Amino acid sequence: MEKEALKQQYRNLRILYFVSLILATGALICYFIDKRWTLVLLGASIVHHLLLVRPRSKQYEREYNHLCIEQTLSRYLQDATRTASPAIDPEEIRKARLIPANAPKSSVYCFESGRGNYRGRTVRASDVTFTHSFLVVDKKRHEFVTGTWVSVALEKDTGLDWRLLGPHVVAQPSLAEMLRREKDLQRLAELPPWMSEGGWTVLRPEGNPDLPHSMVLKQIRALAESTKCPLSVHIQGNQLNVFLVHRVLGQKVNIGEAPRDQWLAFDRLPELSGILKLSDVLVNSLE
Image (tube, rainbow, N blue to C red; front, side):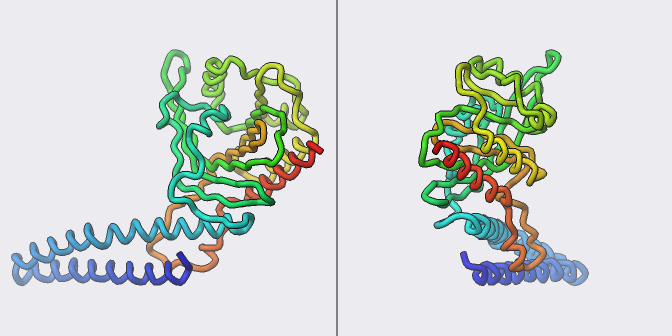
């Protein structure tokens, strides 16, 4: 949807709200004149809201978010588009074993998403919520982690299988529960000072190569320092995945104010530039 079409949709929605206000005011006036008409106007107001105002409001919110997502992705990607269905399969995210999640498929839920291309690489982004249950002192706890998952398909196989979790991504008891299940994943004891002092956790299957190239680690550090969002990085084969906690593409829309160009152009995923640079560094480190 174009900006002007969205603005027209907003104006039409405001007219519907104005009609609702007229019906409510008429019902109040009729209360002092003829209470029978009060019931009629109240009924009409309710029907008007349920059949017209509410559906149009939901539609406007969806279209607003869809336009903003496309505007954001278009900053960095070619052929950027918002996708009607999740751009990333939840099972693909689960198999990455980056963020703890329960066994049922519903414990990884994807919603607003989009995709595009960067230097021939397919880039997908999706809002994701993880649900995980674990025990703390014999009491069952539940953790919900929401953020944006970005996946970049590289043109080369890195030969790596690494998971680098920054601080404050998940609760430590939750991570410990996942490691009890995924027994092949081992913590790396010897980390660069900035990682060990910063509270990073690095996981790899036993026998995998050492840490990624120093250039890759340098870019991961730069990416982490460029955002306030806790993040995790997963590098496996020809796939680069980055999960940003608290970053969401689909945001709450203020229906009370008309859409402004600067709001529609607001960058909802500023970390994408650093993620794409990380993909460049990964590919270059293999040469």
